[in-house]
Structure formats: structure tokens, C-alpha cells
Image (cartoon, rainbow, N blue to C red; front, side):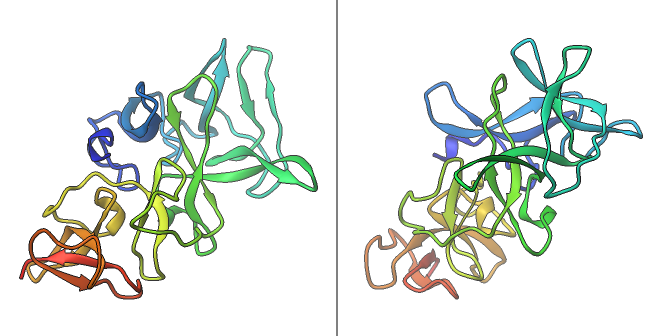
Length: 237
């Protein structure tokens, strides 16, 4: 799956200047990441003062554009409607997006924070909720509740997220692109099925393994990953 991920969403790495990295639905039906050019970035919020960057619909297409900032705060109810110029966008403040959520058997709409990485979500959330918007191939992310634990040897995370070891056990997180042996800071910078571990010469991406079980290491030694019972990483012997 690593070949489908052309850039790193969480770190915003791998794209030319003027483009940003987003998850995307691919032509073959899979999910990956791609570089997209647009007027602005929904996380950096690099629009002129008094405006915000958000996803704007017009004529069946959806693009990131600079528009007037809304007034609804994070977590507050919001609406999505067309203005006099035929542009459709929501009533949320800068950096937020109006997301549909189940409420008492129905559907409500609330402003949630747009993000590229969990570090942008504060202490109570993670950048783990994927939006699928009509008229764009981009799959933006918003902050959601902490991810449930998952199986790093399975495929039980919703694409484009993958399961990685973390300090609190395996969690679903944005998929990385770095391959075996490449330097890293976090496990989800690596391709699925690997983790970022210290091999003695610095942190690098290494394949996952089960200590004393399957999958085993083709080369090296299966060393347990702390706080992740039954999960190891193949490190050079």
C-alpha cells in the first residue's frame, strides 16, 4: 500500500511549494495520499485577514477557497448554505468545518476542527475523522475522539487510516510513506506494517513482527515494542 501514498499528510512532507498533502480516493478504488494545489490551506489558514480557508462548493465542484469567516464556534451547531454568489460553505469560524453526526436517532451538524495531525487537536482529541465531500478527490481530516485500539497486523482501521503501535497501545492513525530503514520520528510516518524504533543508530522504520510467533523477521531480531503486548519490530542483530 505504500506506493499509493505519494506524500505524508501528518507531516505535510513530499509536496512542491504551493501544494498540500491530503488523503484521496484513487482511480483504482483504493485510498492513498496526493499533492493538491489550491488557493489556501484549511489548517494553516493562510487567507487574508478577516477571511478563512474552507471547502467551498460551486457548480458541482468543491475547492479550498478564501471566504468570509463564520461565527459558529468549535462544537457549536452549524449550517451549510449557498450565498448570493452561488458559493456553498458553512457558518463555522476559521479552521473549523461543519460535520454531520448522529444525534438522538437523527443527524446534527457541528463545527469540528480541521487538521493534518493529532498535534493540532489539543489534549482531548485526535486527527482521525475522514470527511468525504462531493466534488473533490481530497479527503480532509477533522479532530475526533481518541482512536480505539486496533490490530497492527490486521486491517481494521477505516481507510485512509492504518494501525500503528503507540505509547498507549496500537491505534488508528494517518498512513505514512517512509520505508524500511528510513529515518522517522513517529510510527505513522512509516508505511503500514512497520514502526518507528531506535535501532542503535537513531530512529528508523522497521517491519512489525510477533515475538516468538508469526509474522517473524526475515532478517534481524524481533524486539518487543513497549506498551504494545504481542507486537515487535525487526531490528538488526
